[in-house]
Image (cartoon, rainbow, N blue to C red; front, side, top):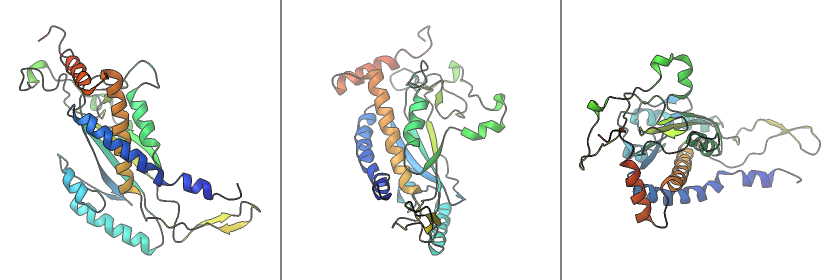
Length: 277
């Protein structure tokens, strides 16, 4: 090629529209099993959000930057406006949360079949993502094991559902692992975050080189947003939906949804204590 135009177009986030479309189908499928997947922005340009628990997903969707913390949302907008004035771009962090997952989804057998591997790869495949963490992630490096591992509650503290079964077998006191251990789900909420770098195309371009001569030149400016972070959350959410739908079909899949639901229900009935209590 004589220039990077074709590469630029192919690496554009526009290709992610198909992923989001497929993710919508996977969302409908997973909803049959009570699984919900949401995302929100936790950081843009150094402005850190402190979303209340439980997270108000409607507030995140109503925010112009998809942030569930109203105060942080306003500061993020201000930071984006300042970066625009300076001809610069901003990065940030997005978080995807999945609830309603059964225990034991995924595999501990091989590195490439672990659900943690597949989720981190799928989220890491999104344009501009430069880091992925699950649960407390890199924060765990500073903690001792006694402060990290998620203790399982004794059966006396488990809750029953309306059918007399367990609402959630083997519940944990904490969720530092982010819902994944040994490549499989623990039944706790799946929490996965992605670091998004600032967009490379800026109104005040950095120095570059001419690919023909190697001589100093100015980087080409391509019209783009100041930040990709809110959009990245939507795409990362879709990738988690697609990956989880794949895992569900592998474990419970049948010829039609009724059979798949029956397989899922039969499995859930077997994951309590071995004495059948």
